[in-house]
Length: 446
Image (cartoon, rainbow, N blue to C red; front, side, top):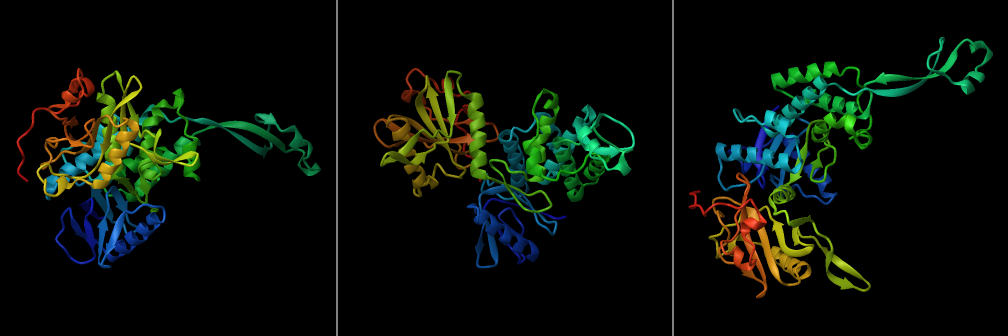
């Protein structure tokens, strides 16, 4: 099983090209499979790649792993810098794992065991190792049994006699009893899903240690049947007190089995195929960090949806949904929007790489949620060309302003303007967030 590592917006071709994070050569089989996969996603309203000149495929802003039927694994990393090379690949790999851990609320014990940086893990290996570590810990604690009601005929009495069925027995079978009884078995939805996910890992893993552990665990779960309906079994997954030790396994089962999650798109293959919209992943990660570091007296509202762009007839039309709305005493005071894009604070000629449609969007948010008075922020990832906030604010009016600020994904720091306090008298930046960056840094050489 070969692995091809690229990043967002990379170009793929069947011709021979120099391999790097922005371009790669793939087989004709995988090229055709990706085209078919893109068509199926496009019919559902998602675009994962574009066809260029019938010889090139250009990926979109999705990250994750795709495993083709031929066994080739395509690993797509986030584009967090303009640099290429092994160091950029290592940083992007670690960054993606970190963001997934936070966004998906992955159990810290498992991820720490699976994210050893002494050697490089691909995303697929990371998922497999984390699943096996978590399942091994669960089996050592003990799998949960459950009672199953069986109805059968036997030559002896066991449990309850089904009187109605017994009375309907033909004369020649009067010596056979129709009985009902309970059997204490491992056959329950959670265990069936674990067994199904484990069997898939046994088929796709190519690492000797993972192969050995997965087959050992599969032998220990030999009494558990496979799941016949994955979605139905997930809906029956219990989360009561007696099943608390099963909860860390659920998210790994969803990743391995490709079960639908809010941010994930799944590929219809026998391997592990998961794609995450990077825009949504970045937004969710920022939301979790803001939730942790926001001042206690402030309330953070995710995806507020109480306002509309305009009225139409007796109702409203075009709902406005900012990423984050900060309230104080139930009064909106700030709007924040997260955008996964590399912008440059020195590229004034090209408007810093900012999008005009984003400004239209924030203008509408400011007038509808803040009544035209207040502060708004566009949050972008921090990198070499955006080490600090863009020095000057963008003013929609004398009372409504927009700031472009960076968020450092490595240190989880938000870099707010130095004169931020002037716009919020009596409230220091630290009074709002405890995740503020330090003094401005010297620009790094790209």
